[in-house]
Length: 209
Image (cartoon, rainbow, N blue to C red; front, side):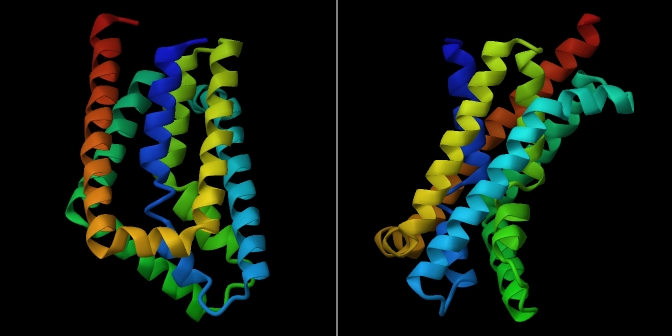
């Protein structure tokens, strides 16, 4: 079992997707819904996001090659994008934007909020897709590593589903201050991971491989 890769994939995707941080957004999107409807929305959103991320893990690297984009270039660009997301988390900008997206979706009476905005762009958003492609590139077509990545995606999806199911309790337990501190701590960790992606990309470029 590629333990180092497993830990890297799990930490990266957990921080980027941020299941616990999305619990308040889930509550705001499903305000007024009966419990049965909330459970259905949570299951659908987690399933759709899982399928999107798993598909990205399996064909994302192939798609880059078809577009003529090298993996080092994508690592650098992806690292910069993840760093931007991390800075928003540290400064508290990301949570506010997610809440506004959710409120807009409710106001427009989107028929299936499980697909939008929950599955995408909140769960399987640009940051999660970028991180998945980068991790798939690190797997380098090794079946065990790809299977590990897909397994991590499934676990993250299950965690998201549990977080949505327990959203009311999580929000009450953490409170406003707890949610804010958790988001900022995860942002710092994600920033460090993003810088590492950029360093790996630069090493690949200047190392000639």
